[in-house]
Length: 107
Length: 124
Image 1 (cartoon, rainbow over the protein chains, first blue to last red):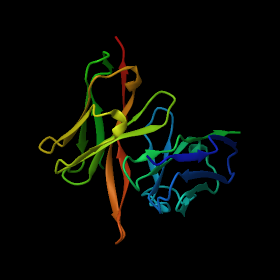
Image 2 (image 1 turned 30 degrees about the horizontal axis):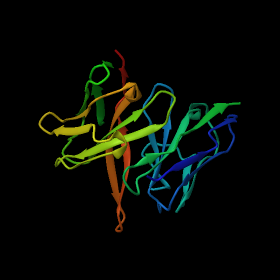
Image 3 (image 1 turned 180 degrees about the vertical axis):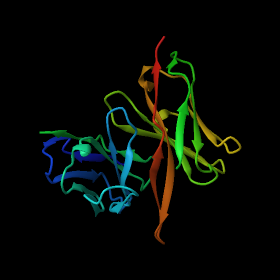
Image 4 (image 1 turned 90 degrees about the vertical axis):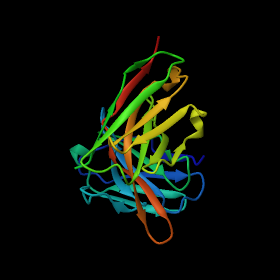
């Protein structure tokens, strides 16, 4: 199985900060990489697909980049509603696998 | 607006079979890939498998052949069964719609709609 490693596992940030989350795949997955946001008690929500495509209705402060094994999710100006856990997922090959998540907390 | 809703018992005894159904509204089930994903307490997300409307399915080998995913297009529903459950199967189970994007080289899959989740506890 392809292992997805996210870093950091958690971070503290303030409203207005620029936040960067990294996801590394154990082998090349080209751009078969998705990002999800999950709030406590809720289902994950799709943010980014195909590494850099913004899902419908997602604010433009979210962006994704990368290819091969290294990917980044960036939030340019953190808003109060962005405090959540973020997961990456590869769909390059089955079984599709997720990272363990990055929890973004209020500083 | 597409909506997914899981239903099924919240408590299952060890060694028995966990059964959940996902009802899709606001759109037809007769396209897309339909998946089950679970999230064990304090853990990340684990993809269980998918079924296509034609009946083609894939199951994650991590569940060691205990999984059955089926689809009923007449009811706009798909279902999950996990047999011989143990405490390790305690989790929130989500159903999700898998969409695809084709760029001329391949199909990219992603989950664009999710159910709200159904907590299943395995305990005697």
